[in-house]
Every structure is written in structure tokens, then in C-alpha cells.
Length: 232
Image (tube, helix red, strand yellow):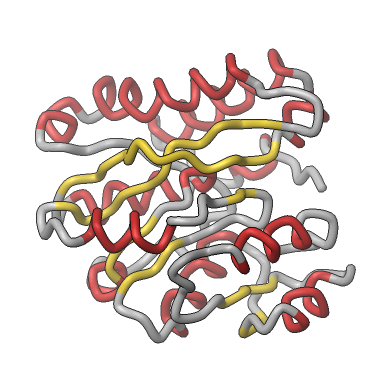
């Protein structure tokens, strides 16, 4: 998390409704200057201080986790109440190395169905276009709003996320864990915030998503975050 004071109350309430409850919740803070840390600690979460950056923050969180299974949940993504059961059932299949939920992008006023549909489609067309052989073997491309989950031991075995990555760290992880088994998109949904679309507009937002993804796929990965500004 980073300066997620506005988003955390809804996430805290959602995690309190999980049945069964998770073994633990680890909040990896990248230097928040607001009330994020106090909210997380007040919810009983274990808070870890980290350098800012998605890749390094995810790595530190998974390394510190105590459970055999881990889920990377962004602060603006709300999981279903049966999230733990879905994760356990999905990873009971040894052929699955990585999986994620199907996100619905929604704001306080409406669902962003166009971007939701594109988000679903790129899970399939991106690996089909750039990695057709891997696609045929079960590779899919998931992103942070998919609430990706995996076995902690597998994550550590492949070296985790690129610690230098500030965006597209989840795509890199899909390629790494995809060497161990299938990457699966499950049919259970999560709700993720439309705050970027609300800030940028749907056309600009989808163009940014597409441009950053294409640059990453073509190997132009240095400083991609300059095309993907923070929205809080």
C-alpha cells in the first residue's frame, strides 16, 4: 500500500467478512504519508515498512508471510467473502501455479463495463499474441487487480517479482510462475476501483493500459511508471 487512507476502510470491512478468515494479513507500506499505517495496525494487520515499488513490496510481503498460500491484494480491490475457500480449492490442483480472480471495475456511480471487458480480453489476447506456445500450454496474463494468488514456495523458487518493477510486475510474475504450471483466471469476481478511469477518462485510461502493456511486451521496460502516474 501507499497512501491508501481513503480505500482502506472498505477493504478492512471486506476482509473482516471473509469466511473462513485468512491466516494473517500483511500490509507492505511503501512510505505512506497519510493514515494508512494507523488504519492497518488498527485492523490487526502486520505492517512491514518497505522501499516504494510494487515489485519490491510484493517480494517483502511474500517473504514475510507465514502461510503456504499467498494472495497479493491491492488496497482498492474488494474480494468476495469466500476468497480463502476459492484460493484453497484452485491451488489444490497441482497443475495450477498461479491464478487470479475476474475483476469488475466499478466506482461509486457505475460499473465500467467497457474497461472490464477489455481487462478480461487482454488476459487472453496478450499471451496469445506474444507467447503463443506458452498460451497453448496454459499461460495467461494477469494483473494486480486480479488479486493473484500462488504457493509461497513456488514464488520464492522463481525469484519472486522483479524488485525494480514499479508497474507490470504481475506480468513478469506470470511468465516466471508459468514455467511451473498453468496460469488460471477463475470465474469468481472481485470489485476493483475505477479511480484511474474517473481521473483520466475511459479512452485515455485504456490507451495508457494498452501502451504500457505493449511497451513491456516489446522489451521497453525501463521507467515504464512514467506513463502510469499514481491516482489516489
